[in-house]
View (cartoon, rainbow, N blue to C red):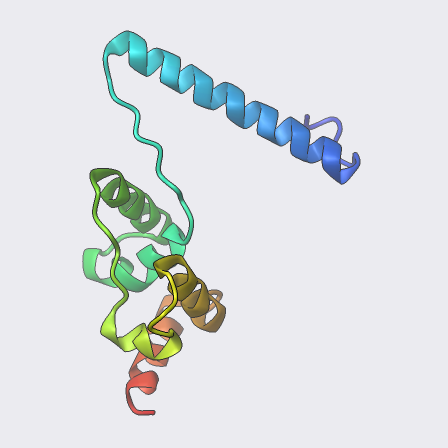
Length: 124
């Protein structure tokens, strides 16, 4: 795959999906052999949720916080939107749409900028 770096977009996608499927299948096979349950979790918005909710409180990196969110989703927890960020969302949106709206406002910002944005939003 690395040697074929500049191939057509469709071929690159196919190769990437193939590798993902093989890794996923290998993990499931090993887990079944060991008697361990595999729980698949949608990783959407985990970095954003981790950055906004857990980085400062838990003192971890964004990547650690994202894995923490994935683990919480696997257990069955729902990640509620913090009060400070509710000004960016609409009531009738799904939770994924709400996180997407927040991501558009503060997604690429640093952790300090995210927290400042939330504080400023309270005074609107």
